[in-house]
Length: 170
Image 1 (spheres, rainbow, N blue to C red):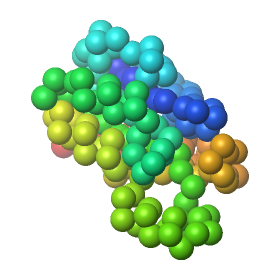
Image 2: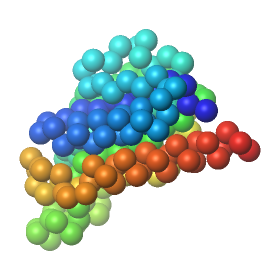
Image 3: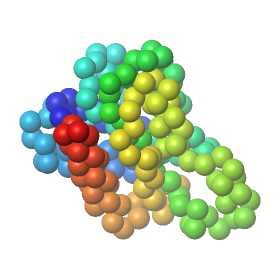
């Protein structure tokens, strides 16, 4: 059962923030007994990371990786500081099929997106990943989000809640 959840995000053009807020609002609506906080990474202090049941971390993909503030937050965590915490990672990205450059597609295939790197860092710190990392599509570097992505984020969170609930019953 989730009692305390934190959604941490960074954003440049508000796209990642919109996804983070959709996730936070859905979590608050579906599980009103849960203490849910949605915070930009610059607001995070160590106390926010204590006694968490669920940690959601999101970043725009910048140069094939998360932003520096998200990377720095993940690096600053104690080695097993997320032991016992369920976690998920997401990013906002231009999908591969939206990249017109052959060179750009090559680099994306080679270096990937931010969410997978966030997920690996969360696992390294002892978190249990609930579902694979997710990417939410933007139309261009500055956005906007592609049609339907906010609804997809809400549905993604519903799946996460179901998986956590099923794990708690086992």
